[in-house]
Length: 160
Image 1: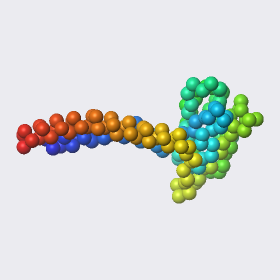
Image 2: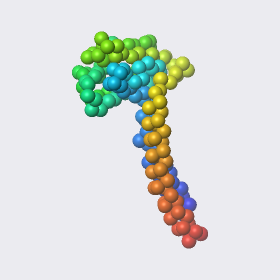
Image 3: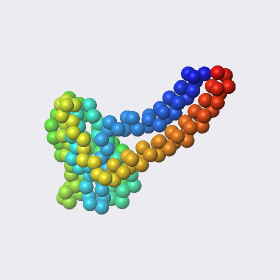
């Protein structure tokens, strides 16, 4: 019976963790249409890491274009990923074609090994969003696991 209670707890924990586990390794670049900038605009990644360009329902259409990737034609919604391999060491500039003359650009520095990795410039808004997501996940975990643990404990006590 203890194993069943433990299994239920583990399932609840995995439900909480699994949606964000893969996303944490991706570096997400969005757009700040108000200032016509990418956010973050300068990032450093390692070989094997993925950059995700992601924005939804922007008023202005944007894209991200470099020597090694393009998100396609300018669009108000983009969800594009690119994984850097061993041939991509170096620094790459990317631009938004419609807003290049207004300075909408960024850089990606690709390190050969993970020893030199630095975190991207994280804006306060991105930190706040991550904190909010964590708190929502913890709340869901408490709502799901709390009653399950209580029920499991009651059953365990009955058959003990």
